[in-house]
Length: 108
Image (cartoon, rainbow, N blue to C red):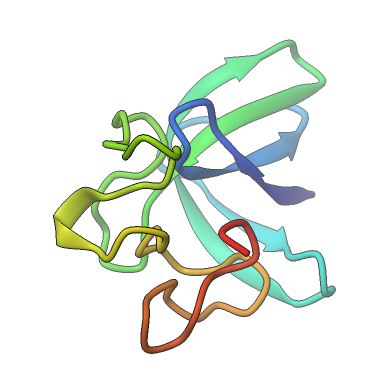
């Protein structure tokens, strides 16, 4: 079982029950009960009972262990995204957080 979790870098990762390893695919349960598949890129921390992991984004680029660039209010401003929108997929709705779609669950 896996759920989304916010990593210290500000990126989305997953919390997996038990141990796992890089390259494995896991089924992640969102807060609304829907599920999505995610690929583990890196196990950041584990105690044997729970593992915190960085995951691949939909386009396959790394996620979770690259430090995020933030403005003075703490919003992610990488890749020229409008201030106040993180630019990543919302873990609840799946929509990209941007001015067109509105803020994601965490930016609200």
